Image 1: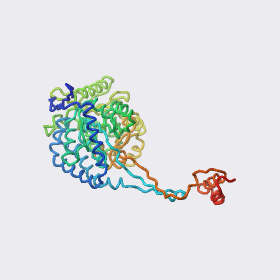
Image 2: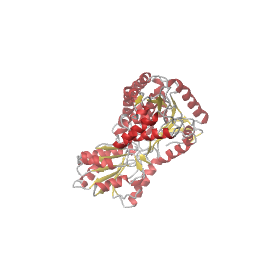
Image 3: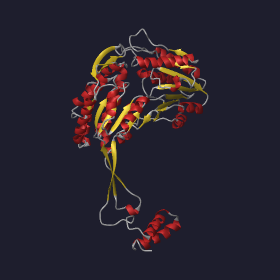
Image 4: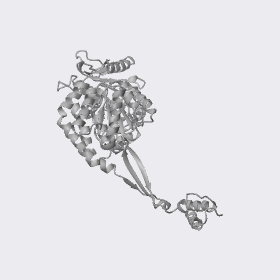
Length: 521
């Protein structure tokens, strides 16, 4: 929960509702100052070799590893997740990204030579160069306040860009820490700058002179960022959440699948854009047993603050998010759904806690099946066929991730190919965001653009084509035009692309006219 007072924002521990920090809401002067410094630093930073930048990135890795305990503690304190999740989901990805970038960025972004197939163009050399864009604005979310911006920033600066980070007002302390880590790793001032504040601060950043804006957050927030960036025609990359479906085949192992689905739905208190928010179980002889096992696994989970090492699920981020979950669950209950376990906020704990909840008897028209919940809730539908499961999974405004569960891997892959999403995992979920080698992004209202992997690198560079030719010989497509020139070009078309007979006649027409006066007849 965040309150704004006298141009400051308060950082609040969602497990205790205690204020743990207060930061400034930066205005136009401060935002523009950070951007100006970033542009100034870019002039020299872009000139460094990949090897020199890789040394900085590897030093960043050492600094993160050295400070892992304090970073994890801050993450858990500011956004509420258990310490185990802070280590696993927040630190692993950035650390692996540093290694992957240092090993691969130079190779993936080295100049490429392109050969042309048309013999008339044989004298030309074609070079593809990958150049940094300039200053990148990164507007980060609160649900993974360290891993999401850190992985993006590391990729951006490795290719030669500089970055201005605007962290979520709900996790600004972590944003400040990110800036400090780059400083401790020896990056020059202005390679990574941090501006704190509210939505207006983000608006000032989006409307500024930037080479790109990368936004992770809600669909509504993404639409506003697009509008704000439009006046400068600043390109944007958006990751806007999901309503991710899990399809369970009848051959899925019961106990193992129940454990997996419980983790996929409830990790980070369900506050992941890749959380399992819809489950479609294809009817089989073990269906009822699987549902019972899911309930059993859910009831084992312990709610509590990160300071209790036995806690499995922490609080949701604030009262607004808690109220949204309550509304969706109550709507489902009132519309005839059955709450098998959970279904209430926990007043016995001081923070914003909601019980992990399993719901059956849901209809696809319910908000719990249509709208992003972002909470520890697992609605389950039992369907008759694979086709029905795929149709329902695709019946969503979102298209980020999905998962398929079962022993028959070929059958699962066939289903995966029919799902309208950016990532499908078979017999696992959520983990791919932490793997820097794999692309991340979605379709529909889940946004556009890709982060991570070589495709994410391409999103952070200008792909420049340089064509090289020697002077001296006029080209046959240059002026002057005329009848003979037209015959030469027409003959060349057939010589290269016609049927066998046309190739022969085109060849002679080409030779007969190429040396003649183009204006002749």
